[in-house]
Length: 213
Image (cartoon, rainbow, N blue to C red):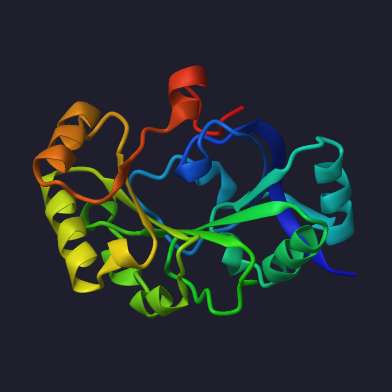
């Protein structure tokens, strides 16, 4: 029997990525090897409940949604995450994986949409970025940079250029809420004519809530 430790399963609007605003079922796996200073889901580091994969999918089915997001924590920290995504994809769901970019994504089902969050300097986890993952990205995937200050912005721009990311997949720039002024970030993107998607976490605007409930 294949078990995953789950913090929560909930139905809400997608608050980030290029499917923002779409009704989505979120499966939040427990555990993460990173400790980003701006993390808004530290409650998922520990605890959770072990649930069999088929039972997880049965709960997801009840919502009647098309879009599924597998998130954490860091979902790839649990090897069974790969099997969960494969089974969801086999059922016809559109599945996105929110991952830190610190763990190997080479075994992720190619049908899944990878939303990979490269850690900026202010996260405190810059050294954890696994740049080898870039070769496993394609046009349907997304790379996210969470911007906390000018240093993060300049570093992110340099990574865009070094790895030619805009010609590989979609790029997301997101401000750290309460730290990086979103208007200032938007104006920088326009001034520098960056080929990126600016995003604000919709769920925090609608519900002032990190989880998107």
